Image (cartoon, rainbow, N blue to C red; front, side, top):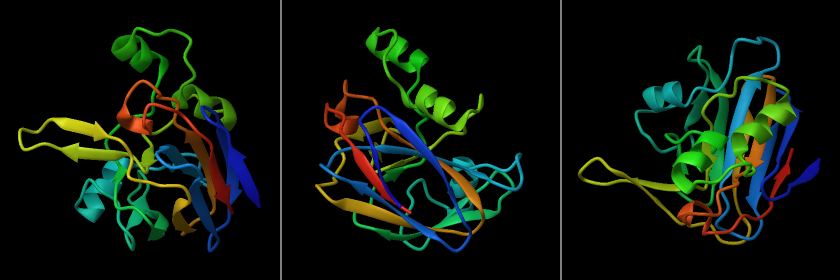
Length: 187
């Protein structure tokens, strides 16, 4: 199946163990907020903290796995045409837009994912294509994504999963190159 994720919206779907998905940045410089849950154990979900812990890095690279809050592998990153994916930032939210940009009622990834997944609690996402750097003084800097049109990641499911993906809603910073565009997913 091939689905378009329109700018500032989200989609959800099931991915069977052994199957793969390909996430494509259609126009370039667009972040994808990615979350997942076990489809057989309601308490098991993506954990970026366990993913950082078990891979020993704040960056996700080809061959590394995405882990759950139970420290079990959920997905393997098979292919990535860019080397930067963020594991430390939360999904953009109403509180973030209010505090950072003094905006109310702005589309946001947290609400988009909650709505499409019909869940009140959403784990911190993997922000595919987000170009985050740790400065020598420990400060975190978000730069424009390095993706160009057609750049992609491919993930292989290690378990039966429910996937949620939001086309990030932040157009106020370099996070998405100051604009929001569509993504595409093939699964």
